[in-house]
Image (cartoon, rainbow, N blue to C red; front, top):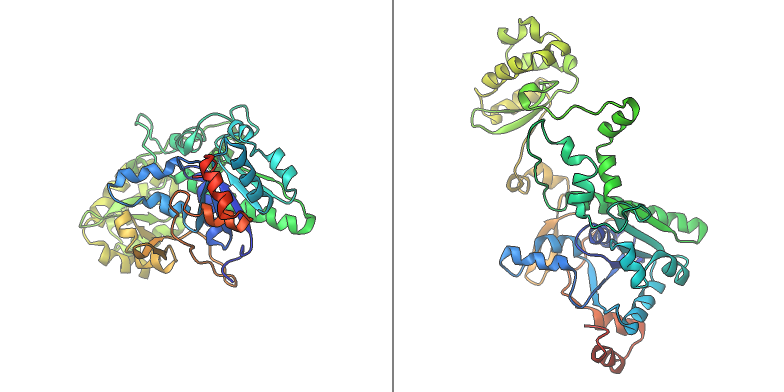
Length: 399
């Protein structure tokens, strides 16, 4: 068996990241995924120009394991082919806006009537039934900006930081894949499909749930993030070693871990005997002085020496890694974060999708397809002959 979703047929009509990433996870889980693209292709393909070479690593990650069918859904012939694909599918995944789906005849009401067992997964910015269901968003808008994420990461008086590409999209796509699996399970009991809705804003609000739930319960907004010298708990804070390398202390339970840290540092009197640092309130109120003292001590040894000392004294810590370091880190690799994928150039290492299954192990599918690479192949499977395929090309219904 090649994954828990082996035998499940998925039709994706997605663009950019949130919808396609959901379908890519389903493909890694064993589903057969057909990606419907317009003749001009998913605009995500255009990102490849940024790399100045015949590659598009972000697109390759979010579209591997799929077959691409290029259809002109503005034509009746193209819509008929899409209907045939959906009528045979278990799942439909899209992140297009509701008005575009209605115009193209790919909305939930119509497709569920065509295929009552269909699980229709609609990934949106603000929710398919919200007043702004048709507002353009991207994850920068609906997740990063509107859900409170960027405000929660911006210190008072500082400028908002830029988001890295696809962060909210990938969280949303992973949640959507889980929701699809749950809906498929429900279908085994009811025989009926349903609409699954996952929005970037909902995911952002849930990710910021501690802050947002505190706002709901107390009506008091969380304080803006502190700089490291004013950390409420200086024992869960970043520090630098003798080589200037950053790492995090992870001593969340301050009073529990304070004796461990003192022991690891050799019980320096400037810490152990200073009453300002004796308990959690004191360390909070005197954070600048404590951070300065810890900075001085921790800068005396490299992390290669501190690490074993911390471990021997039950001081919890983690290195702060760059992406270049992440891809070489043995712990990250042992966690299964990377996977070999067969490409036209031979085996290529890529990021793995985020779940493993002990009894139905997953494996990555084929390389991300070229635009319309599988149009003829899929049409032959639907029962079209070469003469009919040629006529569809001449009519502009397929690429």
